[in-house]
Amino acid sequence: MRLLLDTHAFLWWLAGDKRMTSRSRAAIADEANDIYVSAASAWEVATKARLGKLQGAEFIAQEFGEHLALQGFTGLNITVEHGQRAGNLPGPHRDPFDRMLIAQAQAENLTVVSNEAVFDQYGVVRLW
Image (tube, rainbow, N blue to C red; front, side, top):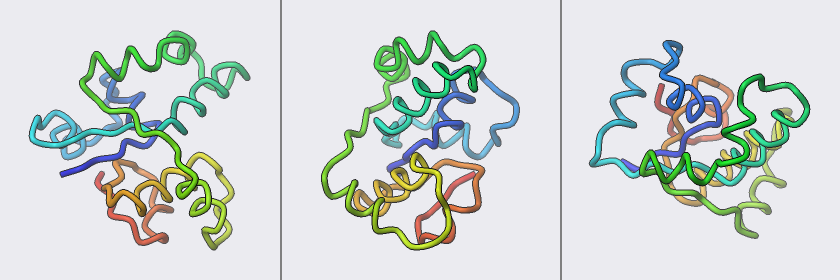
């Protein structure tokens, strides 16, 4: 399976947070699965840490790539196609980070690991 971690899923994975379901933890831990983390998540963590909206994540924001590498995850760059898809998504969901993850999941045929049901409205497969 090819999984794209929502930002909170990535952060909760790193922290061993109990809010993550056993199903999502098992899928991420399964070495047969390819795990991707979007550049949009790096942008979101850095932005929210800078604004003081993500307490304790400053060290992750500063060394995001190193955290990916230590986990064996692959960074997913944002392409022009991803940008176009995200900008053209219908509906009222306004979160630019989520819209980018939706666009990337659609374009790259990825399953999104997220607790946010809003992803379901966009025809992407979600695991939680």
